Length: 140
Image (cartoon, rainbow, N blue to C red; front, side, top):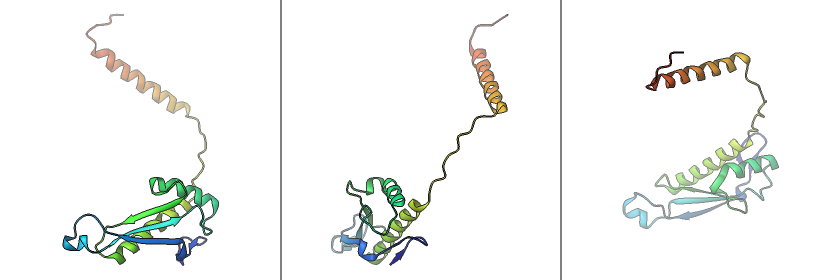
């Protein structure tokens, strides 16, 4: 069992791992050993996730989520398969943890009178600077 938050935990059977050959440096080893990890998690069908967290997770995942709601994380940062497995799981846990936070609703506010006046004063000063750049002299 992988603990995400106090209320959310994933069963390890919900994760599907496959091992592929990593790109990048590694010498002769890179062509022989499958050290990169592709971790797949079916967020759309997961019984462990509440509905609101699932929706935020699929939004946060972006291109890592397929149309069916399967999130794929590829880890190939390290040369060892075990470290890549741990890295992929940690990245998934962080993504779900981030999705579990409810966004604070925005309260509509109005600008204060002083802030409106400051804004208009700044616009007037900017206009004066621009007017001063023209070759014309205003004698009125």
